[in-house]
Length: 213
Ligand code: AP5
Ligand code: MG
Ligand code: ZN
Image 1: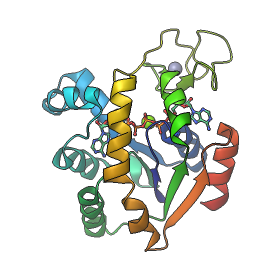
Image 2: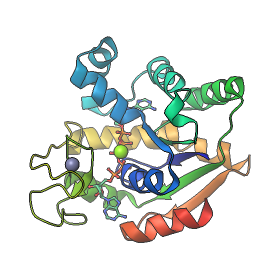
Image 3: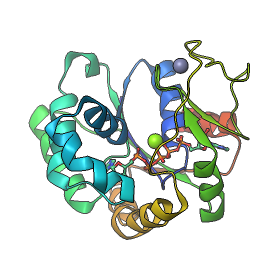
């Protein structure tokens, strides 16, 4: 099964992706995570992306299409993949159609996670994650079971993203509204789009997604 998770910054794409891939035995392909890994590794792509991401703007289509196209043909994706944060522009959606067709693959579901803008800002403000295993948390909505200890790996250090500031969030929301939201009618026209209520609690959103895939 191959699927796309679409939604604004803070909608819960990463949170839900981690749960879905675990239960379905597929691979999470998050372009945001891949770019952050490139920055941490100090690669060429990382150097090009770092300042753009910190400001909340979109990285160029060429770069992200390149990293995704290379990734989903790897053997661990044979059982399927979940795209988290890609595609984000019309050009990326069209490029994805092409590379999938070349590989003889298709997207089975596009799941839109819908959340009010006011709620998104609160979610981003409280977010932190475990750099060791990638598990995502929130100061109010999703704390580790034991304070200061990662549920998944026992790690005790956490990080916050440099683009989780009020300023960058304004730019990220704007990028979503102008560049990414127009993909909703694009996928709806193909009958592939399912919308879930992302205002619900995390477990409930997972249930809504599992019910449709
Ligand atoms: P990316 O990493 O994709 O960030 P984003 O789209 O802004 O989304 P987030 O990761 O911030 O939010 P999320 O939906 O994953 O929410 P989460 O589950 O963490 O991209 C970052 C940057 O990389 C972009 O700005 C761009 O520069 C670049 N980039 C990436 N892909 C690109 C592309 N394709 N093209 C060009 N540039 C690209 O949840 C948020 C918080 O809320 C967490 O704390 C969580 O615990 C909490 N939470 C989740 N669900 C709920 C719930 N139901 N109720 C209460 N709290 C919840
Ligand atoms: Mg994310
Ligand atoms: Zn961890």
